[in-house]
Image 1 (tube, rainbow, N blue to C red):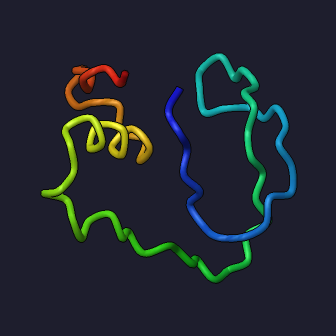
Image 2 (image 1 turned 180 degrees about the horizontal axis):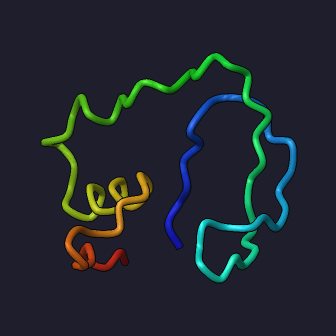
Length: 79
């Protein structure tokens, strides 16, 4: 399962089933956020030493960003 990133900053109000944007309208466990209107984010400090990372560490970090692959191709498997 891919991590999901919040589109805004705020406080978690609930973790509960919520209808997804899928033709079946199935409910999926979702994090409900009360947006604070500030749209704060965290500096991506790991970019500073990108060349020092191992291949496995880069794949894990890319996975954490929610990237599954491009053009129907999968990223290499994580160990």
